[in-house]
Picture 1 (cartoon, rainbow, N blue to C red):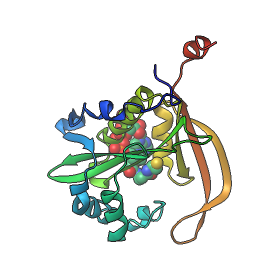
Picture 2: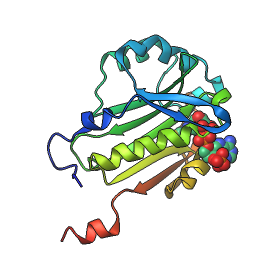
Picture 3: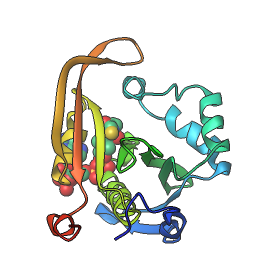
Amino acid sequence: MPSKDDKNMPIELELQKFPKKVNLKGGFSCELRPLRRTDEAKLHEFFQNLPEKERMFIKHRVNDQQVIQEWCENIDYGKNLPIVGFTDGKIVADATLHQQQGGWKRHVGRVSVLVLPEYRGRGLARALIQEIVDVSRNIGLEHVEAEFMGEQEAAIKMFALMGFSNLVTIEDYVKDMQAITHDYVLMGLQLKTDEEYAGMG
Ligand SMILES: CC(C)(COP(=O)(O)OP(=O)(O)OC[C@H]1O[C@@H](n2cnc3c(N)ncnc32)[C@H](O)[C@@H]1OP(=O)(O)O)[C@@H](O)C(=O)NCCC(=O)NCCS
């Protein structure tokens, strides 16, 4: 098993398994692959198709075309790996693995996920998070974490079902894009097994 302290982790190797078609509930299928520079218009449309209320929970000004343009022009999968779900010729979901290169948290990845409302309940978020967790494990990350505002109950429940546990909850700690205060919830999943730790001695 590689460790994050090894140089040149093979994220590119991991990405060779995409595009990948996943068959989900109700005969629904979706193609998963990393975001490309040429996806800018589709990514912008994806965020436009989200309900206004949910956009408030996103950390970035995704309404701003320039923000999306910058993301697409400066893709660095070692920092941010967005895996997008395509169906009907459009982006309907995104899960991103965020990594800090160097520093205290170089062994901890962070995952965020979003699915368009009309494509929910079919297992798409679960499939995307599983991909992110698999990539994280294979490139040597030791933990994956996810951050929420307290109201994101469906997401918190889903991450718990996927094995993430609550690491910390801080009341009234974060502010949404309208400057309304919310509880902050941090969940995490340990990727290294106890056996691997035992074998490290
Ligand atoms: C949370 C979210 C990503 C779930 O997407 P999804 O594709 O509908 O999720 P899935 O179909 O893969 O659901 C996986 C499991 O989570 C649970 N779940 C998902 N949505 C749920 C809801 N609204 N209420 C209760 N449980 C829910 C279910 O148990 C489901 O498994 P099951 O259908 O087999 O019982 C989606 O609702 C979303 O984009 N929400 C807004 C953004 C957000 O909160 N992101 C998280 C921040 S990191």
